[in-house]
Amino acid sequence: MSVFVRYPDDWIGVPPCGPLEEYSTPRVWAQALVDEVVEIARAKLSGDESEALVGALSLIATDTAARGVQASYIFLESFNGPVHYVEGEMIPRSAVGDAPVEEIAGSRDPDVIREPTLTEIVTTSGLRGVLCVRHAPFDEEASHIVTLRATYAFEVEGGFFVLRNATTDLVGFERFREHFSELAATVSEE
Image (tube, helix red, strand yellow):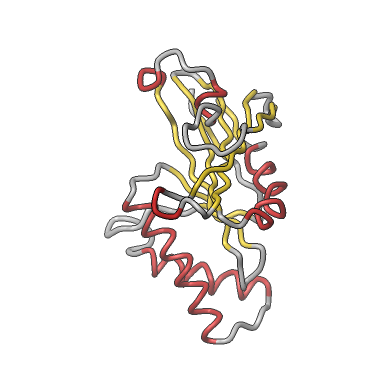
């Protein structure tokens, strides 16, 4: 069995970049993407606006590659941002023992500043999972900055598949929540 994310049309999958890939560097991919999207939308971006968007997208793709993220997806509210980023990862059952799906989603996050909220989800393919939304300090040095962490987790053959998003823009997340839910609804196991 394999897990698939058939992301909606308004989402962008971040491809692998490198000498043997379609795009040699994240910057080459980001520039090609911005050029294509601007042409399709028949939009006019200034040089600075285009450069800012290319820079943000290439930074995300570079960070994704550096951290070895298995899959990542981007949602743009507009050409001027914000850019929402989601990571996808398979977690083998052998790495987490008998942990339940709620725990994989973050229900036992030790850094939370209030009780996490858990919401059950059923994808369009019938796969069952859970969304865990929690609030925690950004890090030890910036404990006054609150980060919202949202994780969808699905139990699949051999382990779990998760989709993660984290942001310090709490209001922005509420605008993004529906789009994140639409992405999670496309997860299937075949």
